[in-house]
Length: 351
Ligand SMILES: NC(=O)c1ccc[n+]([C@@H]2O[C@H](COP(=O)([O-])OP(=O)(O)OC[C@H]3O[C@@H](n4cnc5c(N)ncnc54)[C@H](OP(=O)(O)O)[C@@H]3O)[C@@H](O)[C@H]2O)c1
Image (cartoon, rainbow, N blue to C red; front, side, top):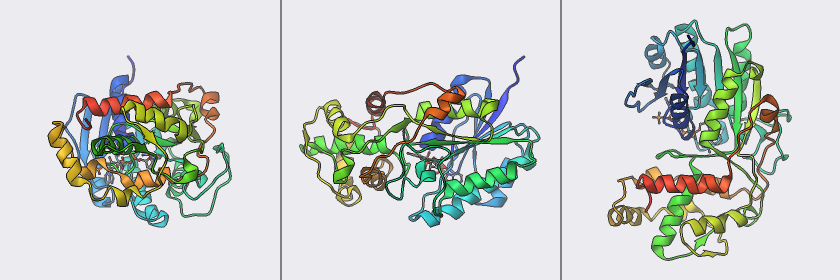
């Protein structure tokens, strides 16, 4: 009989963690425990625990009964305004989870850490592309690096091993998350249409023509579980991306076409500022189109849009290491965007 694995998905309501829960459930053979502050409704093999991972005592108490955990998929995230401020809470949450689960379970085999291209300094400015997993480090602070160092150190002599997964911008369905580009675009386009204005790329001048790539949340979930369950991947980091590159100057008109909108020349603006006064417009759209009631704050990760659309430099990494180790899936990025937009329409989040 096949052995059941027990996964703890840390950050089960995230753009990334939410899809991981879904993927593990669909794959079968897993019991799944989702951790987040807000908790959730248990569903078959999926159990939710509401816990504040910044609170050491709460973490120990709530995780103490998880005696059979075999795999940890770490995708929790605490947002902070500066790169330095991101380090303490994000390192503390990971440390609390590892401390509590090492104490609770004798079966721990693997801890998967969700990182990103910040490891390569992609958030700081033009970085060497394509970025490779073996690239040299950069000046701290950077919480992804500190988290990996923590796992590397802690795994020496431990019964578990680790992998680190490095996606590009992750696109998937979730509401109320600080880093959610597909929703930013969908809501920006829907509001442009409502106001009768063409779809203008709001990013920096050079960002329109730079080369970049995305990571589909479903592809990412598959790759993350593959790496966590493939013995050769132990102790390795992997870039995971869709496998195609694009420029907004090509993608933007296609997105406009999906929304049946004319496209006009880019106009660099701060979405955080420009969209700040549009909550009443959003609320009126929710009424007029009979949308699922969604608070404006939950669909408007404008600062993240400003961040991504501000990259006036190439933004991509070499995804060949994962392929060399045996992961070959890819996703066509244009289709990924339109599939997510259609999903948002189906869920009545946008008209
Ligand atoms: N999104 C992207 O485009 C992207 C791209 C590359 C890399 N990454 C990296 O991937 C990781 C996950 O990002 P994400 O975008 O999926 O994050 P996210 O959508 O903000 O999700 C974060 C998760 O962590 C949980 N959480 C936050 N604070 C918590 C606490 N104190 N105790 C318990 N749970 C807590 C949240 O649930 P509650 O709010 O209910 O607690 C949520 O489930 C991050 O390291 C991020 O840098 C993200």
